[in-house]
Length: 414
Image (cartoon, rainbow, N blue to C red):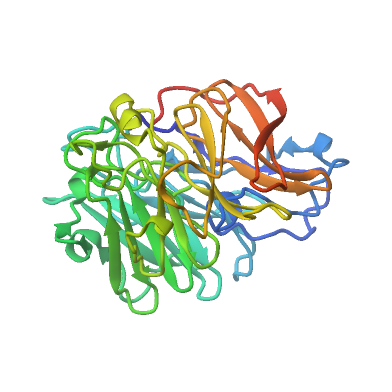
């Protein structure tokens, strides 16, 4: 990857309907709302009749300090009422009153990095990836890059109601993450993808920095939230970053990440241009059932037209064979569907379709209607496109509809 995602904003703004504010809301605890990264949000306040009346609430004052790349989260059930959680590149963490925007609590967890990285287009660099909240323990988890004599990634856990750091945290990733003789080096690793929490383990993905500099790898670091023990997986080859801002997707048991281009492989596949399925830990078997790469992966490497610009999306298609799938969108203008229970190794996918445009810096959504199962996304063409996944053996990807959508900041993002 040679570029980066766009900057969403430095202001968290409130959108609200004309309906009473007492209507029930729904917690948003992670990137794209669900572990599958399907982007489905269900709230009775939003429907066809109320959507035309959706307006910006001008009384909401959500001004915060620092650039925001992570998705804000929405949390209920605390003593101060509904909150919006926002994190910034200045290493500020905020809980805002969801109605007024007033700061409930604010924590700065250390100085961000402002110099000394070989390449990056984020300055300062602090908290980039979307956090995840565990409602059972009322804990907020995120990764932050902290400046100092040695620049380090730390994985934090805060009490989501007070901002206090939970006992035993943060975790020093440099000091704890290793895989097959490799040691994690924060100086060359960037954390831009959303964190996932599955069965008591928080998973944190890493890529390189914009510019593909230095000897980075794609990493997934897992931290057991009960005792802060650390496990990790990494690509064997240099490169193979996990660039997509969805980060780690899950079907509730296994974790799925998409890796980018690798270097100096001499044509031997070593973890890049792939969907990787990880078991709890993370643990990776290395068997073909737990990875997939297209047969032209080496050409994708050479052209920087890799898969890793968009994260995996878990999708179920009732009536299809196979029906339990995972989606990847490539910078090569293709959409790929794989059997997530048997990815297959370096081989042809279950289904493939040219979807035009460069797919990077976006996330797909999936949804079901009485007519079937659909995927939709927005890429560099400036158009929202939807495709139907047919309930056939095997499933296929067919065009459904498109809509021009102005307002997205396009650019060289990944």
